[in-house]
Every structure is written in C-alpha cells, then in structure tokens.
Length: 588
Ligand SMILES: [Zn+2]
View 1 (cartoon, rainbow, N blue to C red):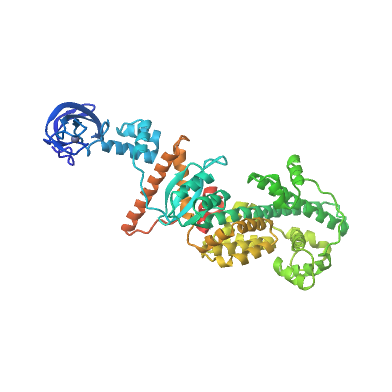
View 2: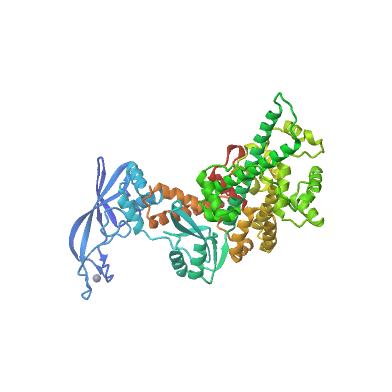
C-alpha cells in the first residue's frame, strides 16, 4: 500500500483506524547527512518518537507517529556532534504539523482570514487555531516580484476620513505589489527610495503623494491619474447638476402654485408691473435656495466655510450665518439697479423667442453689438428667461404666464437625481439607452449652463479616452470662459498640477486597474474584523491578485474571451455608489 508516494524513504509499520487514523512510520535510509557539515553518517546514537498532524483522510484526522533517529557526525572537526535526521519533504524541524497541513492552513488564512480560516478548517478536519494560522502566514516567504518600472499609488481607508493606507500596484503587470500602513510622505518616500528602478508613477491629485515622489523618487515622471481626474470632475459637475435640478423643481412647484392662484374665482387682473416684481423676487429667492443647497452639499463633502466662501463667491460670514440659522434667508423686494445688460434685454428676448438658447452664441452676438458687461450678468438674465418659461413663439404679454403654465406638463427631469444626471453626462453616448439619451437631451436643453457643462465634460472625456494632452490648454481656457463656478475650481486644481495632468493625458498609464484591487482590498479588510495588521493584509491582497492572474491566464489558454465588464445599471434603479465607481472607471 503506497500512502506516501513522494516519500520513498518512509515506511508504514502500522495503521490504526478509529475516530482518528494513526499511522506508525519509520525511516528507511541507512545513512543521514549532518545538517552542519553535510557528511553522511550511519552511526546511530539513539531513536525517539515524533508526533505529527497531517491532512485528514477519508474524513478523519490523520496522526503520524514517526520513529526518528539521532546520528553521530563522523567529521571530527564538526561542531555538531550529534544530529537528528531531517525529513525535508515531510515536515520542518520541530514542527507539529506536516508541511502540507501547514500549507492548507496558510491557504485558509490567505483566502478566508485568521478566524474564518480556523473555523472553516475545523469543519474540514484541518485543525489549527487563528493564532497558528497567523503565525504560518507571517512565516511564509512573501512573493518576490521583479523590480517595477511603472507603478500606481492609491489610498485605501482603514477608517473613512481618519486613517488611510497606500496600495502600490505594478501598472505594467497590473497587480498590487505592496501595501503600506499609511499615506504619509515619509512612509511613501522611504518605499520609493528602496525601488530606484521606478521611472513613472501614477497617482491621485493629492499633495502628499506628490511630495513623497519628489522626495523619494525625483527621477520618476509623475502622472496624474486619469481616473481620479474624471472622478474629481464628476464631483464638481454633480454639484452644478444638483443646483440646476433643484432650480427646475422649484420653478415647477412655483408655476403650479401661481396657476392655482390665477384660477381663483376673483379674476381681477393684477398689474403686470407687480407680477414682474414678484417674478424677479421669486427668481432671487430660487437662486438663494439653490445656493443654500449648494452650501449643504459642499459641507457634506467636508469643505470648511472659508473654502465654501471661495467657491460660492460670497463672504465667509454669510456662509456661517446661513449655516447657523439653518434656514433659507428671506429676500424682500429690492430696488432694481440699472445694469449693463438692460439695453440689450429686448434683443436677447427676441433671440430667445426665436429659439436660440445657446448662451455662448448669445454672448458672441451681444459682444458684437458692443455689450461691455460680464458674462455672468448675461447668463443671470438668460436664467430668468428660462425660469419664466418664455415660450418660443411670441404671445400677448398679459397671457404669457398663464398659458405657459397650463401647457406645462410635469417636467421629466423632476425625478432625476443629481447622481443619475451626472452619469448621463459621463457615460459614453453610445452606451446610453434611447430613453436615457432623451433625458440627456432634455437636460442639455434645460439651460445654457448645462449645455456648456456637458460640452466641457464631453471634451474632457475625449482627452481622457484618447490621450491627447495637447488639447488641455484649450480646454482649460474654455472651462474658464464658461463662467461655471464648479469648473473654475477644477481648473485651479488642474493648473496647480499641470505637468502631471499633461502626462496623465498623454501616457497610457492609469490607476484604472488599481481601483478593482482597492475594492477587493476593502472586502478582505472587512473580513478581518478590523484586527488586520498591515502585513497580513498585504499577504492576502497579493495572494488574491496572483490567483486572479492565474485565472485570467487559464481562461486565455482555454481560448475564452475575458469576462465583460458588468453592464451599467439602468438609471431607473438608481445607481449605487459602487456602480458609480465602476461606471466612472469605465468612462475613463
Ligand atoms: Zn557534521
């Protein structure tokens, strides 16, 4: 009976099958070699019994009782007078488990984690405590990878907003190569110094990684990661969209209300003047409400009042007052001041009624006529035209408001969330379903601001998808000229990091492949019940990436195409943030 096919030097002397299976074994070679000097010896000094646990057999735990011999070393100069014969294929010296049992426990630990691995193992008859598993994991040699040339740096949260670690990925190979316990400049730069072969580093826009690279790898070219750029831009754009969608909703509600008022029995016509004032007041109030919502949004994103003030173009005190009162400030009637745009209003109105709702076009025409005011003032006026729901055809002034209101159906954009709207902007047009394309069309037509934002996003994504860095300057200029606050902030950020952004838009490298690893990482981290130490985390992550690499290779060998990316979820179901992440990385 062959029980140990790969261990010809071991003979089975007895088998006992009870709850456990016990095998009594002895070694057969007449000689053994001294572990210190390598001399073969046949002089036996004594024998003793070694007990080992092995992998279970036919569902029962397996115990080995092994007669081991001690030998005298024949070499007189050897410091080792007596030695124990080694069984390198079966077990390590002094171990209580066979190598294959240790390996099984290690695998359980790598795949399931310490405690879960121990629990799973005990179900399978592979016994080892959590501590044993962790000890085995730490003992095992870590996979050595070739010196990397192109790497990506990405952070991952031990604890959201509180503590971050760093995941380092070899972008040429597409897998993680190390895990650092934090994202501090010292830690990251020290790691970089140990890997002088690195010549290109893709990273997010954070200043920490940028300074770590300058300190630790000054030879390397910095690449601002496309994925992070797009994600960053999407954050700003979603604020713009949230503002406009909120405005649309409010206009709708106000329109319905005013219709109800007009349908009251007393049909006394109010003076047009009063209605105009009320309308202007309403527009101002709407703007303020949108601003207030914007502030709340920014606050949620973690900005302080000074940063918010900068973004919104109001004083810090105003922000603090609004946040303190937690109400939307009431704005009473205000005296109309003469504005530079006033003399052109009639012209703008007629162009608007002709159907030209393109802000940039109107601005050009107005400038040609000698308009000297700001673009922002012009857009503000266009916004009131939008809000007042001016129809494209000319109507009698008195009936305008009422007829518009009656012909208004509930706006299809009312049910759209800012996040859904953002995905419409960021996904490839050809990936959109027909109904999504329609919604996007309506969104773009809803305001010249939104159309401008859409065009900017589309051009930016084009630069990202077919890396064309040379267009960056033109894009930055266009974004600045758009008078959209959100884009102004984005432009400032890009300009601060321009070399790296240019590299990001010109070189093929991106952290895209890293993002999947960060997600897998989060899963592993969670399965460790928060007791993960970074070494173990690293071992498990590297193990998982090796496994998935193997799977890919096997699939390729079988001639199967790689699995397609998951189809983006339909907008109606409301995209979760996880899907949002995948979609953005798909977009990028
Ligand atoms: Zn020796």
